[in-house]
Image (cartoon, rainbow, N blue to C red):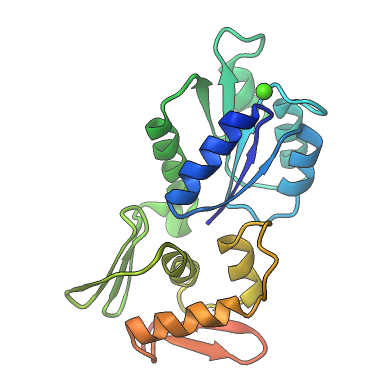
Length: 222
Ligand code: CA
């Protein structure tokens, strides 16, 4: 899962990014509204955390512009207490949720997870995906194969998550790269292959099929 933080208070932005990275998300940070709109329009983000008072373009305008362009990425607005804008206005412009500063980090993470779940397939009712013997709990970030829990690194989990959310479909290498690595990553795109082979080693080689020239598919009937 890849998140975009648009926040001009650099210390806040950096600490949010650090915390969310530790939760296993790929996180990009930008500090002004115009750059935020530009990045969010690329369509690679699973969620945008958007401050309201921003240089360049305020958060409401960024949000409204994204919705007007047809982007349905979940948006969590950060509002300032007693500011000149109110929460109702934030929701009117198409934000999915809002959080009033100062907020607790734990609450922020809970809101982020709830929004990502809501967006998941089939209405996102359950964060647990079961495919044959494989069970992936995207909320608890735990993986089971039959009755055994499998230990995965954060990145391994994130790659598996992309496949399991679209089980039975082909997921391209660039889709995986975009959703699991942040834009600071400038390494070899073949890194995805490295993670796929590790996942095969841990979960069994039949589970993830390579579709030549297209990507990878998590087999629903291995
Ligand atoms: Ca601000």
